Length: 280
Image 1 (cartoon, helix red, strand yellow):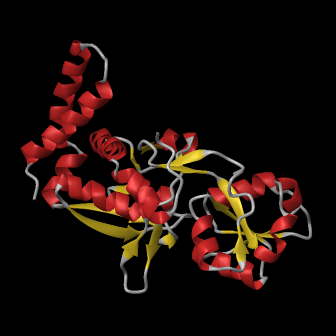
Image 2: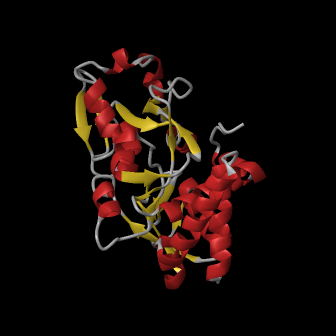
């Protein structure tokens, strides 16, 4: 188990990394603040507990998925495990959901320390919460039946009354569909992981999804296609979400993400899951 003084050192390195070319006086002030926060802040609480708690939905292959036996796997899960490993502490995953994600992050007492797994960095989230640096590029796209892939070349082709679009509730996919598909028949299905199969079986024509999720289902179900995978409707990044007031923890998470980018371990995770690396 990592000791408090060692964790302080990690935190100070994070602060100095963020300071970059800032003045010595500014960095010295930040270093003093960092020492005080690491004594009394979120990091000290996690260290005392001995375990870092990650909230995750567990319904989003290949970023966060919970198997029937309770084990979690995925790109985001690997990033979480790497954060815990580099901090030298244990890890525990807590189930959350897209509709309750914000409420769960903001809950008092806290249900978990931070959330991970397919969470897009947005200005709206940053208004009320903290978000880390991005560790995965993302964007909205679609899944459809492979036999109908040539029918969908743009949003206009999807935004028709005869096209049934299925989305999971409470997340950005539902918001995107409601804002951009005013003529389609939009159906909200409670379990995100079931939607690709429902599309393949004909219960819906299109699933609004993301470029991080679509390749997995195309590779594992030959009935499906992602014809707009290389031309996503939006461009964004995925990051780690947490409460405001946890700036000490945020800076440590950001430092780990930056180290993973610089030492090649983040690229290896992209290769493991067949995702495009966008951090040259």
